[in-house]
Amino acid sequence: MLFRSEIVKAGINTFVYRDDIEYYSTTTGKERGAIVFLPPNYTESKKYPVLYLFHGGMGTPAEWLGGNPNEVVNNLVAVKQAREMLIVIPNIRAREDDGVPSDGMSPDHLNSFGNFLNDMRDDLMPYINEHYSVATGRENTAVAGYSMGGRTALYVGIEMADKMTNQYGVKVLPVNCDQLKSRDIIEILNSVEFK
Image (cartoon, rainbow, N blue to C red; front, side, top):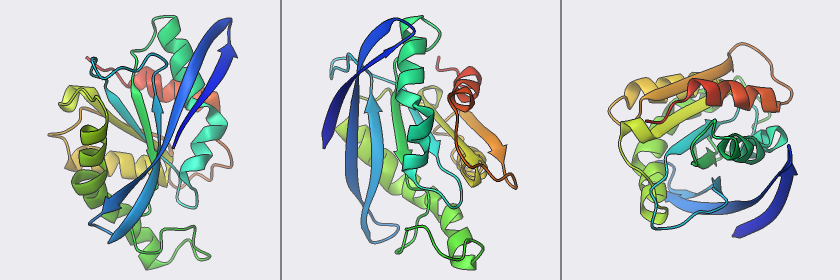
């Protein structure tokens, strides 16, 4: 489902397109969801780099929404401090029951973050590349996250070094993050450089 909403920050007026997607995961054997933000002037005739943002261990993709990544990126693009890009925010808990568990330290829960590598490589990235106008190649793909998502970003980035050049973790484990701030997203964007 595609949403369109207007944002006004720092005197910059742009539109945000949010696409809540579902893709089939051969890794988990079920449909999984993700949030995709498209640039304001998204067009199929242009290829865009992709930034994958990962949530924390007891979190969900919605946690990133509090930091307004779409607004931060669009405002940085408007002042020529970042390139237009797709932002993909998946659930990095890759297992059959991928909801937030009552026991966050269970082996099944902890192993699901390592298993996300398979979901990312075999299911999510191919879906994104097929359904959106994506600039492929490792120089156009980045992963970032905080807490367990930061650990997962580093793991995915190392294991998939042939597919991406940028990995970044904010407040990597064992820090407890209650809420992401826009400054965390700016810190990520300052470390990610698409060629």
